[in-house]
Image 1 (spheres, rainbow, N blue to C red):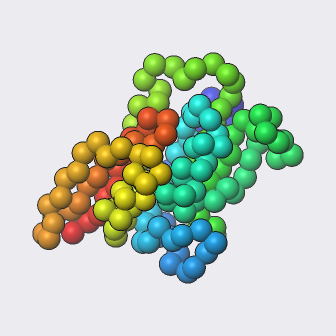
Image 2 (cartoon, helix red, strand yellow):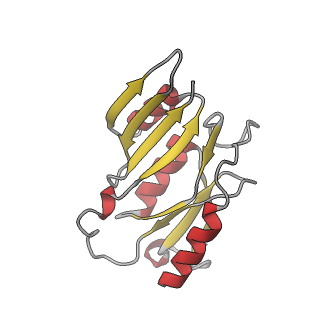
Length: 159
């Protein structure tokens, strides 16, 4: 993926932040009232990462590249909520190990009306809670956890 393509993807996705998730029933369990800003991350295993994000956050595959690829031919997939803008791009470009620090760069932030419920779903899927800040009933609940590739995920529940 070229630097220009990444820059264009980032520019498009940044403008799509804060879109609420529909509450209508879908084939995957609803994550509740959440919003998401699209992000692209490198992963060691696309199927493992896809399983984590579909089971925990209710995301579904919206595209793959190459479009007609199968198995190891697929080098990136997009995950999102149907009918909503914003994408989580999972990329595995080659068999090289992820560079030091790349699996810990930044964090994915999800706004939710049930941070503890989402954290339970994540830990049930193998995640580890790194830190929990609970200032309820008058303040926010913020939970930091990791995904299967070591990326930090923040669940933010406003007061």
